[in-house]
Amino acid sequence: MAKYQKYAEYKDSEIVWMGNVPSHWTSERFKWLLTEKLKTSNCDLPAGSISFGEVVYKNEDNLSPDTKASYQEVLKDEFLINPLNLNYDLKSLRTALSKINVVVSTGYIVLHCNKSLDKKYVRWLLHEFDVSHMKTLGAGVRQTVNFSDIANCYFYLPTNIEQKKIGEFLDNETAKIDTLIAKQEKLIELLKEKRQAVISHAVTKGLNLNAPMKDSGVEWLGEVPEHWKIFNIQRILNFIEQGSSPVAQNQTPQDDEYGVLKISAVKKGKFFPNESKTLDYKSQLETKYIVHLGDLLVTRANTPQLVADACVVNTEPTSPTMMCDLIYRLNTISDIKKEFLCYWLLSNSGRTQIELDARGSSMTMAKVSQSHIKAWKVVLPPLKEQNDIVIYLDYKLKEIDRLIDKSMVTIKLIQERRTALISAAVTGKVDVRNWQNPNKNNNQDNMELSA
Image 1 (cartoon, rainbow, N blue to C red):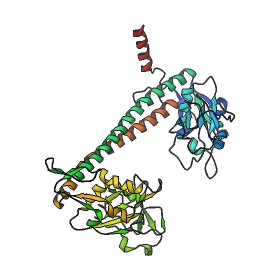
Image 2 (image 1 turned 180 degrees about the vertical axis):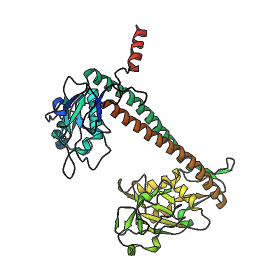
Image 3 (image 1 turned 135 degrees about the vertical axis):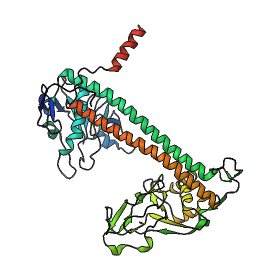
Image 4 (image 1 turned 90 degrees about the horizontal axis):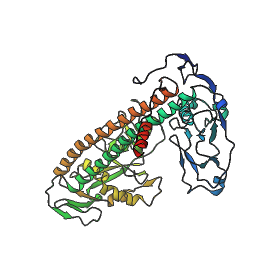
């Protein structure tokens, strides 16, 4: 915030979420400037809801006519607040200035603001109120607020000219920040696609660009190196083990406790030993299911897109930990590099077979059986090539993952800056009265050129 000026004089607002405010700002209550709209039905409008601080259209496929008839309208330039379940969800943005006409659940609060207020400013004021204070209000098991909870809260209001400036400033600056975030998210998406392509190419085409190729005879596989062999996975397994699921506490075991893995311990080829639960009693531990270094683990159940995720254990849990019954351990013959088979299962060719078998199951929890796994095809190079491919992929993926992590850190820093900027402008920690909207200048130049 160093590049922005501060106001000359401040006073203590005695409001925790606002802190010190410019000395000429006036103390107000939300109920003096906001009014709750009477619930109005309008079945001609599409259904909507709040998502990430925006009013959006809602899928009506599973919405009955009777339920929609009970909904209330929220129109463009009206404010919408989601007051439900504040204690269950501390991250979602719960206030929005609607840009569309929709009907929403009667659980929402619809508000009008005084005509003297700048709506863009009020949007950002409610955003900051939501992020910094609203989640401390409410009562009940579901911690729900009503309009009176919000209405009785105090805040400090800038002049009308300042409201307009703050609203324009935050609209402009957050749009630029959101563009930067979107670019980083796109970069992460492209890197993940590249990661998948690198795995898929290496385990189906090998590292030798000049290797003679042959038709695999499998439509979704295409050509493979001539000297590679195609097997059902059953041919390269000694056996498959399925874990057990004893009663456990949903917390990571300490050094003197025993644990059982969750399926989240196996994710995109990586093993997360802390994704485990604590056994109630040490006697529950079944030693034959304890996870060891070098184990090839495959998840038995998940969504069709995630089921049969695989990893090789590269870090043993700090305390004895067993597989749960939603995880398989694949014991392979000596001619197989487990890491190669893991990469095969993660490849496009591996996933094609997995999702074909998972497709007929529940879309929320698909399962693959031991017979499914044994029937899947795998293309195998000689053991030395398997080892070379694993070394190559370990190196390449580490490089890609480093770039993904770097972009994720960048996004986090940008998001923190966005949050700080909104707070600083809304509470008067920065003075934007002299800020000039660059878009207005561009629009004026364009008008003059066209004239």
